[in-house]
Amino acid sequence: MAGWTLLPAGLLVGGIGLLLLGLVLGNQGQGRFWAQRSTEAGANALVATLAVLAILGLVNFLAVRYASRVDLTENQIFTLAPQSQQVVQSLENPTRIVIFDPLPNPQDRQLLESYRQAGPQFTFDYVNPYNDPRQAQDFGATQTGMVFLESGDNRRFLQNVSPSERLSERSLTNALDQVASDRTLTVYFTQGHQEFAFDGSETGFLQAATALEDKSALVQPLDLSQTAAVPDDASLVVVAGPAAEFFDAEVAALETYLNGGGSLMLLIDPNTSPGLDSLLDPWGVTLDDRVVLDTSGQGQLVGLGPAAPLVTDYGDHPITRDFRSGRSFFPLVRPVNVEEVAGVTAVPLLQSNPQSRAEALSTEGALQFDENAPPSGPYTLGVALSRPVAGAPATADEPAPESRLVVIGNATFATDGLFEQQLNGDVFLNSASWLGQQTDATLSIRPREVTNRRITMTVQQQLGLGVFALLVLPLIGFGLAFLMWLRRR
Image (tube, rainbow, N blue to C red):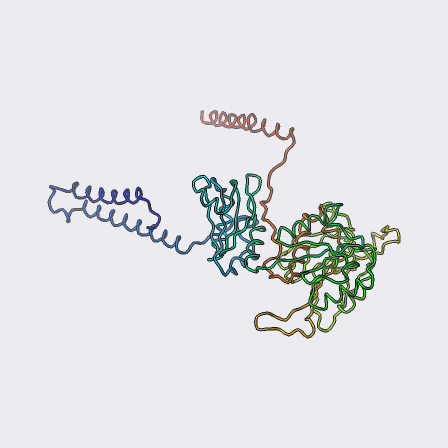
């Protein structure tokens, strides 16, 4: 009966006592008390009551001891993603989330409770800073809504929660993973070849860079014409939509980095030639000069033209394994051709619709095609490749190091405005996490969304519905009642 307060326990004991007293007093003076039928009926009632109480107590005990929940919502909005569960289960030390908020939000508490049930090392506490100012001062909580993560002697501020900003599964899992892995992702974006900017100076990869920083990554520019080599602390290098060619020395620097166990993400738009063929040839990768067109009409249902293929077919790879049949789209994307090379593991990530075909762009960038031409798809639009580093054997603690490469025939899909559409941002973030050779659990997690099933009506429709409900339906009811009255007469 753990958790019972004095009031319900007293009421239970008092009720049983009154029941026994009523049985005794109700049969006094009638002789042969235990042989009477009323005594037998009362005893049966008492036994039945005690049996029901015992059953309820047993059910309550089992529910507390073996707690289980079933999420029956359409999009499983109350269920943690598999990546989150894996991160929580991998925690080796007790880890606690502390929220300084006098009024806990039910949605945040439900999310934290899901984390608590996923792993024994995770706990959370809500602290009222007005009732416990000493603990608030100890954490450095200067205002309500501050959230902290505590693991051992390490303590860090996570975010502020407010009515307009709640806890998110993505931010919590990324923070917990940083605790579990104790490793910072350092991402370099190449500069000097008309790549997309990531500093917000113009439309480019600002949202992508911000999303990486939200994952506690360090984002830096990289001008190989000045450094002549990739920095040693680079977790991966991103080449985002170059329009000008790399110098031979720059290509050699990227090759040296890649051959030494580095990771490289190449996002190459069509109608560009960055001069990276010598880097891609040993991997068996060639970039097609044509553009993939989706002639199935599937994209037109969501406002996309044939030059922006809608992708729902993904490869069996940690980057895309949890995408299922989710959607991403790639405006003006080129095919990525892959040939088998000894020692290189290549997995297609993105496949176009079978009803697609490839057409060439003119030198001016114009696209002309025959709408009646037969399809020739599907085409590979992105591929993930890996190979062991030569001369670097595995150790007892760590597997053999490997070089990793992701090539996608489009960079526009991850630019500002498109990054947060469908799974576009997840393709980029998951690729960055895998290239950074972090655990699969750190891959991007999309927030669960409740399906919008609201009925949108015009003013005329609302008026018509109101007249029907307030006037027509009552008149029909009165008419039917009048007809029944006439029929009975």
